[in-house]
Amino acid sequence: MFRWFGARLLLPAELPELFNTLIDVCNRARLSRLPDIYCLPGTGDMNAYALGGPEGAAIILTEGLLRRMTRDEVASILAHEVAHIRNNDAWTMSWAAALHRSIEWTSLTGLALLRATRRRAPDSRPLAALLRRTVDRPVASFGAVAYPRAGCGCYRARIDRRLASANRDARQAGTPPCGPVGDCM
Image (cartoon, rainbow, N blue to C red; front, side, top):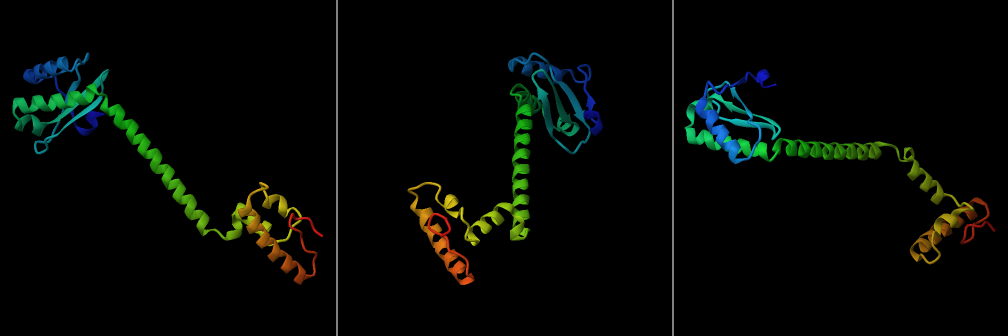
């Protein structure tokens, strides 16, 4: 993959001081395996990347970093990148990115569903249409739906008001009114 971006693998014979520093840093970090070092061409950029975890890793250094920094500065950069490898930060960051994507997609799905329900006509929502039919007509089974618990005054008062209104409408239409428990008289 590094070769897609033009990076080339560095060998210990090319830069023995760099590899001696890397061996020292990896020993101090108790890494069992030495990471590969790649050089990314580009004299203007100074950057470094660590990929992978303790079982297999690579460090990418730009050519500008290798040319323009001192040996001690490069050693501290290598130590920083080795710390990323030792702590398995690439794995942690990939999980964090996956979690972020899942939250993002969940939020976007919720927003899309919310927008879709707001744009629809009111009767195209099945639950709202069912509730509207239940409240708008005086039905015999209305009391069973209205009084889920015997002692719930808030439901009872609301339903009694709606039932009284439905009874007025029924009397005006010439149909029999409904009683307080929904039984037609």
